[in-house]
Image (cartoon, rainbow, N blue to C red):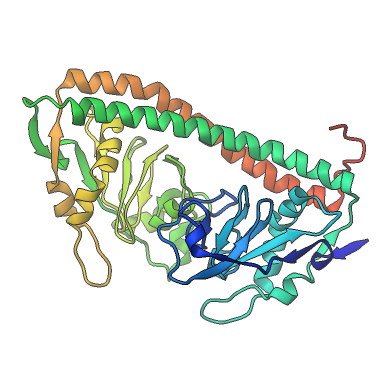
Length: 382
């Protein structure tokens, strides 16, 4: 037996005064994270007096096709843009179960297939409510939600640990190299910290230049989707042929990837050998400097680097500019002290990020099997 989505939930229709909101309680498609990763703070509030409201427990789904698969279960009351759909559970429907119905990739595929519009397609609100939902009693709904929530809570815990480790490492960087910088340290440039490397894009018109499992190739879009500190592959790999016929350069593990345009400042660390497109000016750290110092130097000095970007269509930092950005060159003893502290922290962060990838894969493969009834939860005691 199947229900329609409209049988278990409805769209919330209320409005809220924008004056009652702040950057943490206003949600738009821009500050919803992809891949069911939650939200960040909004950059700004809308300039209207009233906007769509949501309540704690509601499920928010981005409704612009390029931003599909952005979903968040509200942990507070607030407001959101009109490009976000707000679903509230009907009586007899578990809120957690509703969230996982809507988080299922099958729902996103259906929403995309029934969307309307050409330039910026949006999900059709009527069609969305016709989406077929499996029939489970309330107890089974709660069991399904509980199983999935256990995985998501572990992912959240790992993220919280990593965020804490990141704050510790960055605070130590600031203490050593900003607040207590030695006046005797010399002033150099980023070129003294490492080798600045650009990238390249093999022709998209030749499919042979790309491979499912080839040479790792990273674009700024990859870093916009994957917010991990360490990255090993992007959405696409390039083939050996594509590599030979482009200006892409293979860089070693530990390279600090830094996007130089669209936008300036996405930063990550290569887990393995990688290449990038031309939207990067990455830094391969000198051995005596180390990855941790270069990574936090670029993060800390992002405003300075951004101020040197130029261009009319979009701002870009050129290779020559990147190489010439002023940099403090600490003594080897202080650098070794910093790297020694960061090494176990970085290893733990990378380990937890890899665990989260495995957990997310498990969650996304388990969910449709639970929703289809392939996995029976009736005998599970929770």
